[in-house]
Image (cartoon, rainbow, N blue to C red; front, side, top):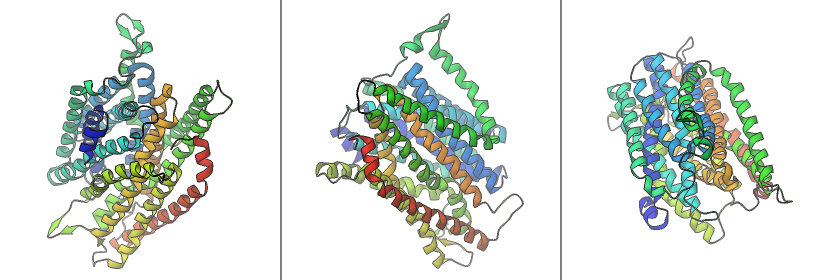
Length: 495
């Protein structure tokens, strides 16, 4: 249904970007789905240490688009940035095959820098396929989001199974091969999105520095220097407390300054207000994803230890339980894509603040489902697999209310001259969320290191923390609903 919609009602370039992003997500989620278990089971890290490393890595992955978006805006152009990012990500996956902690850290560094160039800029190209005010934009981003989750589904089934069954190195190798496929699709289909603006080196990027070396070439070279820096920051992850806070303050200043400059010609501070709205939505986004991203850490370890994963005599690998999320995205994504268009046509489309509030409410209910699972615990102190199925179902429907809408919202709220920078700022909120999510997951750590909880104690600790998360999220959802009108006013007609 999604691919039919692309052919019939959307720009041709959306299909190329759909499949490019799909294979890039195979690479990213293939790494992510195995990372916590690899740290705990192969590198013998304790739960808390593994969670903090995971949080630092995923936090840096989402912080990198701030730089990647800025470099594309100013020097590289969007297509060149995506191509460079794809090469670095493939390189990172293959470095991990070295098998040691050092190779893992170097590989993660290359993945972080590469993702910074790829992620922000491919989303920006999607936005540039549509004219301002095009009602298909939200639908197009939702279709694009389905591509993300087909990739995630492949990663959380095929790569998760191969990695846990035959060895982690085979899983990481498959993830690298997926990135090479994404690189091929993006390059071979470049004529489909060629009409988009800003794809090639900018005028600033073409300026010569020395001989035939220009500023864009220098950006490529200096990007490799960031890989050992990422290595250091993953190991010394407490530094990220200050770095991410500083980045948020800097990005806030940059957005507000850009909004003020865009308003110079008029008396109404439209762009300034929109930038304020964007910053508020970034804070909401941090809240959602810090909790949602427990999937890769505490929820995976919960599945490994306290969930009965037996299905007709076959035991599902713990990492494979993450497949429920992309499966439900694919199942419901097309429905949501059509739903937003239909609701808009009859004037019943919920406001963006209400969509965010409903998304957070469903996330909260998902965590509270673990309390129901406690009523059906077996003798090994394991809840039924259905507990995770329902949890991920609610998390997924919550995600569909918030994530693709957020991507589309950024392209509508930001001035055209800083589209990549604004998208990078949006991904900073994911960075902070993932890092905070690692700290939340570390609270559940009761295995490894010096502390070892029994199965009963571990189950009680997991469900207690998940319940606390659920109740806090309900309160935040209600608060957003109460401030719906002031937020809509700040957005000045963006819907």
